[in-house]
Image (cartoon, rainbow, N blue to C red):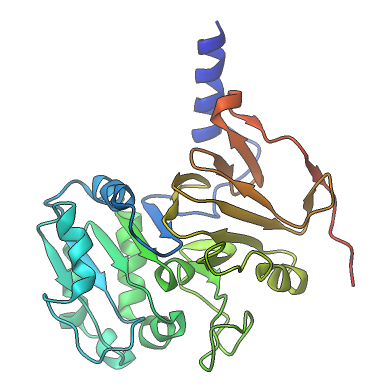
Length: 289
């Protein structure tokens, strides 16, 4: 009976039958957001599984980096080859006019998965925001594909662009504040504990309390399907929600590998507790300054 109860809770979590409308995460398809590092190849293996296997056509977009040109020898592809990916295409331009051409977007039409490399996320905005590339990325999700990325490639997937300043990556609310919005009403930060960034998203959530902040540590990922995500990897994910605090008054709390989160209800779940909500999270707004 206990196993049956646990199974029913899992079904209700993954496939809710009422109470809210889906619309935070992608209605179809999946997202993989990694906090940097990329030493844990099990995350890439999960990405390839979501794309359809090792032979699935994958497009790698390295535009967040500093290079002017990239080809099939780009070292960022080495991790994909290490997990057996055999159908890789590199797609890069810094020119939004080029990003609007039929020839340039053609690899995206057949792709099962797209991966954004690390660097500076504002470069991705300047090249691809509101272009045909952007349209085809949305279309990829609509047909059930997967979009992933590490570091800047994770942050760009949110609707709010954290660290989007062109001068420095230490400014949280800079001259670029709009991401590609594969996940709505969310700001994403990366390299969380490795670079001692666990307090940085508070600035954004205090200024924009309607947003949910998600901070992801290195070698850690969230796997988003619909309005739910699961944590995998070796580190932690921090949640920043102006409507909720831990009972000690803290302004963020951590999720561990295996934990799950409902983006619509903003509830965290721990499978070891039969998917019951985490304790010590209370409905209380942060003190206003």
